[in-house]
Image (cartoon, rainbow, N blue to C red; front, top):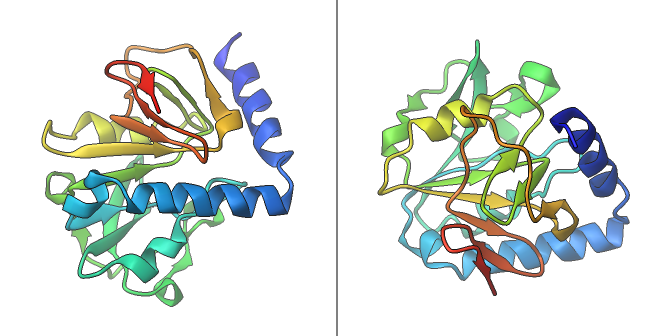
Length: 189
């Protein structure tokens, strides 16, 4: 199946989730993330603002505990991550996504400990399919070995495999409401 058809199918699956099931799954994913050593070790975390039915982890603002939380802002073909202390600071950004204001200082990707990455779908090997703009592929291409990228998705968005292009970048870990997937070994618990 080509990426366009697969993207459409995965978006349809995500949109079909009932609101109670979605909320329960988001709570489970949030709790799973909060219990992970990657979260516990982190000091600077890049999040995303959920759109089009993506997993919402905005509850992390209540659990920051001294961490610097960053949200992306689209600048041309790149994502710039800026510190956000409150969701009330956000302004309409590219594609209508709430984003940090232009005057917010951006952080270098090398200064971010943990990237929480959205996706339309994930494979059990940590490959990701997004909306097709390549924004997160470009960010993850700059990620060092000491940094972690955690993909979050509902279980219905995880497939055994997805088409991968040479420029696609995967994640180190995938969290769903039902499991934790370690792509390096393709094991899950």
